[in-house]
Image 1 (cartoon, rainbow, N blue to C red):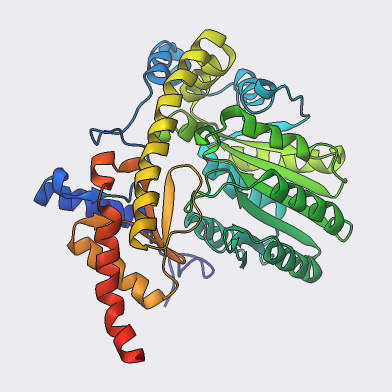
Image 2 (spheres, rainbow, N blue to C red; image 1 turned 90 degrees about the horizontal axis):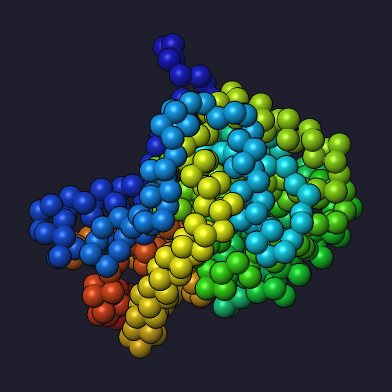
Length: 422
């Protein structure tokens, strides 16, 4: 039998746990009423009324973008010069940094992730992810025909530096090159943010292992603008300057998430290395991917971001508006984490951000709990090691008592197992 699809692609099937859970929540809301459903599946920010949050500053700025500007192609495959300048200002200049880099506009942060995997690894070479991470990382790897190794994210309540080192060392030994992902701050799906000391250990390890081959760090900062320390976090980027020539750092920035403009698909791939000749080869390769895969990024979205980033009075209004919702996230998290601790519901170490994750080591119990909660109109996302709770999409009123409802459901599933063991 002749295949319509190529032999290497014929077994692909799109199974997205986030969209699957989200559709279930939507259908339940239609059937039982949204007031009777806990939608902890959506990875986008919803306000306290259950409406998708759209920053007033962002969309009024977008309204001011000329229709022709919105409608035409961007002036460069790499992204418009003002957008590139806006990204530099947003990530670096805002905290007094002057970091030499090259910037390529991408369709959201996902475009930056995918382009990096495609252009730094050959088919068959391995990419390294955290074991608990954003599900589409795996989809990206499969799309590029790239095997995956994972490091264990946690050692107790801290980043597992020894697992990180061990896996990177083994992959370097096998293929002479490492591409490894770190999602920080506000890690998806756990809400963990690494300490400066943990980052220092990572950097020192990168320096050592880069003597054996090329080391590429993909720093996924999708939620950087929702951390509790604000722009101060961005001073970490200074650590990426002046590293050995065998090191390339790629920062994957999502303007879409920062601006609550998820559908505009605007992001950036920020490339940093002291090895300028090799860096330029990556820039050209990624530029070619941009032209051949998505052509140009949403021009109106880039202009809107640049206008906010480079106009002090508009940026000040944006930051004031955003701060209210960072505070709201903190308040939601405090309710859920506090009550989880009180009732004994295990949760991975959470510090800040959109998501927390209920820890369930037994795969069978986890899957059963996921299904059982659906019957209670509670919708979470099934991830490795647990169930992701989207604090970003659950109003405070629905968070009160939620941990106990989940713990009660979990106890009903585990009590028979405990009785058998006794």
